[in-house]
Length: 289
Image (cartoon, rainbow, N blue to C red; front, side, top):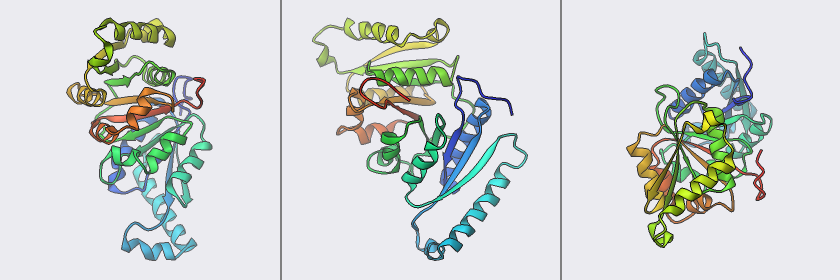
């Protein structure tokens, strides 16, 4: 296994229950681990039973957990048989979000990979459940996988509200996927511009200057302005341009964070058809992990 470079993550943490609904996150984690030459940690969590058939194993306590762990080890051994990837299984008990946060804390810089949800609703997951908690507390990027893997990410969109959180999102996308075309997308309500159509273009210029990207990276970034209700414009652009990965930078003070927490957030996050990478600023000063 070759060492990863400073532009790639030191590892990936896949949170999975090894069921069929986690197949897409598993395949994407494998693809990215190979692309980045990074080790992959596969975390399974023994939590409260979700179906009547699971109750017996839960009541078995340690014996049930040991049985689940052995089954998971066997499944992972089959999954990665003959693979050149460096894979480490990890097991935990208790609340899923706490277990993922604890595992991530032991892997600084790793990308955390998870699926959308059992009902395939990223909005439902991000609003009031495990992934919402992860998005607000993780110090690492969170990749939520929705699509089948058809190769490396080829078309990436970074949403910008011209804040430091958006700068982090763009810097992360450029660092992880050098040479990949990146659309820097900003949507605005035309009524807010008061007839000054040049304002978004000027904001783009200032934003890109503040990002201080190398010329080679800047050449792959294309600013795009959407006019209309931001959530619907962003969703439509992802769909119409066959975006593979949408990247969001979140911070409590950012307009994008307020948009995602607003009345249309469930519509936005459910309708974004691509995989989603969420990065979070750690404090209002603009510093990030």
